[in-house]
Image 1 (cartoon, one colour):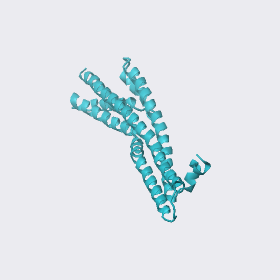
Image 2 (cartoon, rainbow, N blue to C red; image 1 turned 180 degrees about the horizontal axis):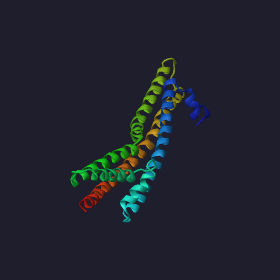
Image 3 (cartoon, rainbow, N blue to C red; image 1 turned 90 degrees about the horizontal axis):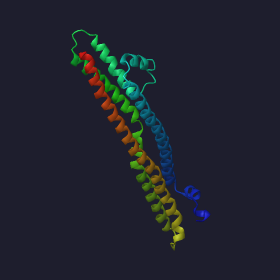
Image 4 (cartoon, one colour; image 1 turned 90 degrees about the vertical axis):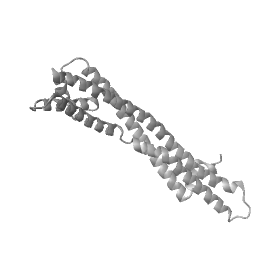
Length: 224
């Protein structure tokens, strides 16, 4: 490829519309990569915290002591720790209320855990919608830039008496760059979205299972 058809030269010589398309796609790619790295950190930490909490919870220690320990670091608690704290706090509060039977206490505790679960899922799913949007729309944005560039190239041929490949090649090349950049932005976003969605779903199932197990444990305590 000659210097006249270098990538940088093609971008500089592209029409304003194509340049704007490329700018949008590059910005989307940079933002999506930032979010990809952030979700990798957040989900990795969520798995580690879940493993650590389950090891501590099922070690057979006193639940009151565990609750007090987690309450000291309320702002730093995430995942299962937040769900446990919400359920146990409501369980203790409702047990102190007179005329509350065991079923009412358990339903209140489980309801609090469900609310905490919903908030945790919202936190884990942050930015996934953006990755899905980038993955689904970037190829079409790139295709728009390609179509526009090719249209401009053929339109320019109307002003010359003899059309040659040398006249058309630069315009078509700069137009195809938009499609390439669109795919470059879309593919990582789609792969990351699918991977992280699966990880979030697995964490959600893990949290759901804990709620069921903890509710059963509270039921035994309520009857004790």
